[in-house]
Length: 329
Image (cartoon, rainbow, N blue to C red; front, top):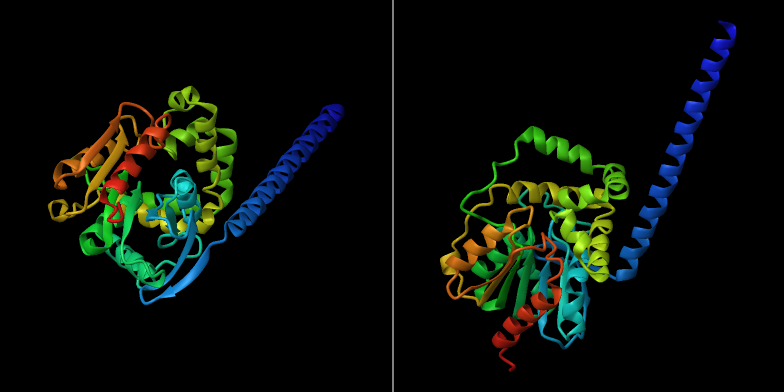
């Protein structure tokens, strides 16, 4: 019996030592990754502007005299996601303006709690004033589609063209609104970086399906370049804790998204999505295109929320719309 107790003690101590070692390694790896993301964000060179509509963070890419494109990021984003989404457009000569929406990175969540799509759209108008830009093309990606629609409605004279990229906006069969308890669980999950980091590191296919709404078979069938684009999109959600308030607000706004007066939008519009988008944005894109006068729909059967495999076609379609609406041509 004594020998057995000794072995049990040894096994217990060994187990504890292994747990401590794994925990220590995890903490060091997470800290290293977070420090890397802090350096990445700093290197991108965003700035914070004070406007009559509140403080807003913004970064730019592309030639300063190029046609301006206001690129509104999706959930889990910030100015950095906007720059990544706009890289192909900046390379083609557009001046990409990438702000962080309410509650993302260095754009504060409004003190009065009013982080509606209308409020965000008005802040974008104030941002354009600060940049001395009278008119821009607007691209709203995923949850960014809400404020993009409101911008086109509230500031039509400043909207050259509207692109709704996998828009998480109204559709006729909306999802059931997220209950308060679910929002609390979500808040707990994204208040710290560790849960997200563990999911992305150890279960990447699940992360791509749940967070990027892209079927794993679509990812694995994509080119190496497209896989790298997806990997970067997932990885660069970190630090997720710096995007917590924005993510929570997006969950409220996009689940059962309210319908806006689409028939009143006079801006040339292109809506883009894929049928297998796990967030159901194909129905939203098709509905918006059917009710915005003169709008076009570019739809794909596969590609997921990231439209994997279709980037060249998407870029050409967007550039075609912008060229046709640019008064300088």
